[in-house]
Length: 250
Image (cartoon, rainbow, N blue to C red; front, side, top):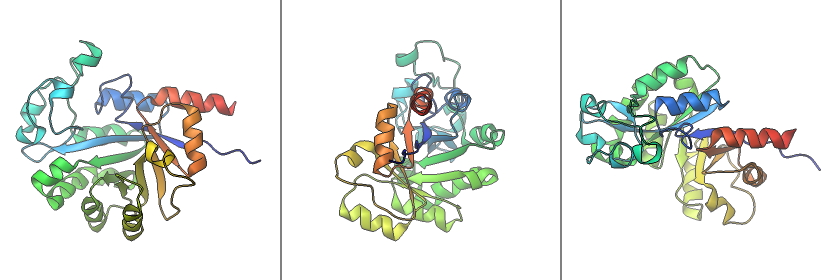
């Protein structure tokens, strides 16, 4: 029986199991751990600057009561992004990075691919075209290895219309309606919660895309998902998963 190859691994919000999510230190740690793919989230500040931030509300990661799109960049850059509830004072000097800072970081890692999730809150607040255009303008120097992704099919279409070489759609469901829309959209990547894949029988839909499933912990689960058709798996514990997969191969 042929051995199923290991799926490729995406560092979800950087090495977020051990470092504050969506920060430079988390991304640097993921790359040091051997990740060749990183994923992070982008929102716009009030003055339209793309920054790395998952939630529109800043409280969970910074302790600040307010929304990122209601603050200008200078104010956002004063906030402590060290996730004090998780890490205490260990990362109190960490700040919310701009997307431009991440592009500079990745410029020196030519083997790294970035999946850049454009968040729906910013799309709704600033409009799809303005938001996507702002993100792609910053990614332009590395766009050949940066993949804009979103839950919003309109944002995915917009990124493609603005000449992104590859795009990805994040699915909320694996139902027939999403399947039909995926076939119309034909993105290079489809992302989905791995639990949705396990809840349905058989392999994932075939198509012109590569499948990426999140949030995956453990080499056994990763290999099971690969057997279902996953090309990539996404994890916050990137070092541990890479080590587990390497151990399985030895």
